[in-house]
Length: 374
Image (cartoon, rainbow, N blue to C red; front, side):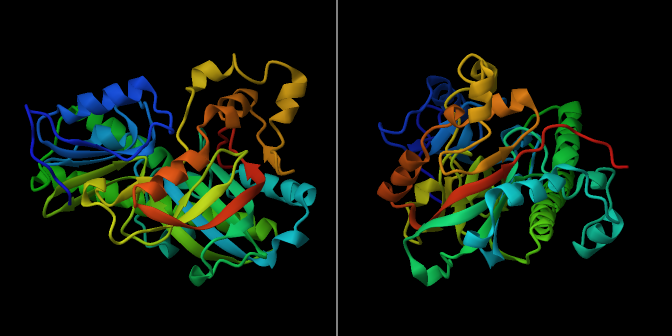
């Protein structure tokens, strides 16, 4: 898996970002602190690295034990890309935006049947299945900008839907439970370790089903059918012979094609992980552009005037942004994120992935206000 010798009690840190890809000093310090934790075997930092609550986001960590804090409160958060059976040119942005507004609302269906169809056990949080959530989560209608490798079957004429969401309240409850017991490392072979992994795996399956239902809702709103292209979690744990691999804001490089999205005002990229990638990358990739500025600082940077807030409801490609929460509109502005082009360039230059296609945003839907299911 790419482990290196422990030196002076610190695990090796393998950096997969260049000097051209700006990394905040706080993220680097978090990476150093993480590597000093007993039982950490190896750390891989990706070009989207940025500071997080319990540690850096945009990294993979190989350890001897399970560390729930590394994953945080949204186990299973990830991306799913779907191809629609409709040409992008026939979907008018304004009409599509109006139709897609309905996926902001609670999913008014028999959730029990959806849970059963997904093969999931019932949980107290199932009412939020099929909903986007807040923060940086979104559902986006996209058009193909460019196809770089036609062998993967990306149709340049079709429209696509990208869903970014996670396990919602289920993942939060999992983290709260662990915090009540203390956030220390867990032996994966112990009963506690097995219990955590069962709950973790449930959250991952739930999150995957959630992304699928979000995309299904978007397709139905647009009167289309959706076909899965890529699906993966970038907040997850995997126990293996060489240790416990934690991915915090890091996409898996061993499960097929991966979407690496930019901000809502930038392109997203579909990439193919390279089979001969360096083992020290811990079979992982960047999961997005990575934040440049934290949410609290964005209010002083953009959106101070009505005209600037109106600008934030459009993107440079002529697309629309649906977000009724003024604070969220500002916090998640394109300016909050690093340029995606630098992240993709680093993935290529370090031999981690090659680009298959790029996609431009047509309509981005962000969930702003939590509503109870009626």
